[in-house]
Image 1 (cartoon, rainbow, N blue to C red):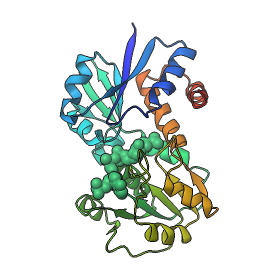
Image 2: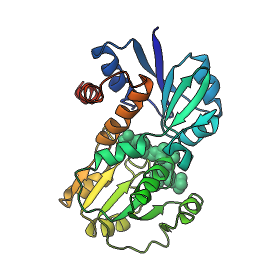
Image 3: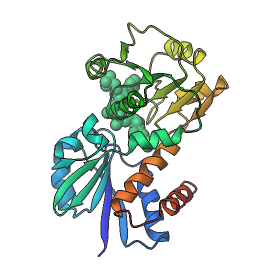
Length: 264
Ligand code: NDP
């Protein structure tokens, strides 16, 4: 039976997920197709998912928390963080997973001796990455534009700051999880803060892919070892594809086909 998958987001036109998953389906002869769906109202996610007849989906900005709320059952790491990026239709029930955090750990596997991390942003992606970092015994500081979302991270005993009260420290890794630079030329924090942080770190990663954000540009100019979001995208995509195909395909083959799609 032909299966249909999609990605939900707003904006969603930038997403490379359709190319990645279709590359796997086509070249590994899996009878499925992956499309994209612009979803404006996160509350309509569940009804849209079922009205499209989807077997599964990915969820991107800004609907990952709505996706958690929409699920009939949430499994694994997603349950811990309340953020879902992968949905599976299991006999008419909506099952939620999160593959972002493991995707990011895959992306930074070549970064060595990471202990102190400064995370820019406090949204869904930050929740996933921060929880994973804490699970790995790392120390995390969260810096966000506004206060409201920080209370979640305060409860996790992270050091939390807004731009107004930020106290810089020494870090091993800076991570941008904000959407600043996704569709604009904004930095994830005021330039003075970014400059100070860049002077006090060894590695820099950005969750945004497909373009060099002004943040990553500054980091590269300083000669720091940098990663954009492409490998995170690949990592989360491979894990999502395994769920979509019910682990019927070989993981290495999935990775290879997805990697190829980056050059389409
Ligand atoms: P959310 O909407 O949940 O959170 C957005 C965060 O960004 C909030 O903390 C918000 O701050 C902050 N923010 C937004 N605009 C600005 C700005 N101009 N300046 C500073 N801070 C800003 O988004 P997600 O966590 O779902 O996604 C964030 C980014 O990560 C997106 O760009 C997405 O594309 C990328 N991503 C990439 C992945 C990959 O595989 N490479 C996977 C997942 C996400 P406030 O609280 O003040 O509003």
